Image 1 (tube, rainbow, N blue to C red):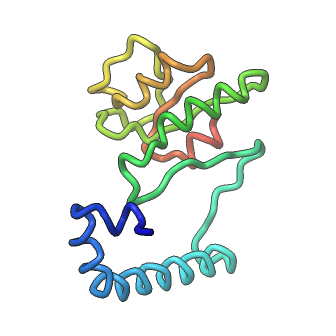
Image 2: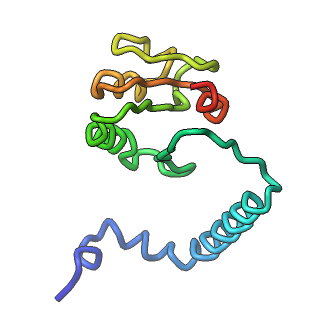
Length: 136
């Protein structure tokens, strides 16, 4: 019995790259471990906020389904008072800005507008999300 990965010829080039990319994954894991340790020791400052925070995201995971997941999560929490805070990727806004359903995607980012249209919660964008979370 063969797996889908073994049968799919489109994945063969990925299998050939694995030995080359494995050391890069070890390096990335090491950097992340050092970063976590620096946060724990207070060498990198963190921003305390007074409300619970759920962070959905990844530095390298564009197109991974974060926006639909946030919409789903907001729907599950619709009985709570929540706000969605985004960096506003693709938009020009830098300061804290509330996003409406008819906002200009060029100003606040297309994902923020999509969320504002789909969820009943407030959607905000700001480049400095830590400062925005403190202000909100």
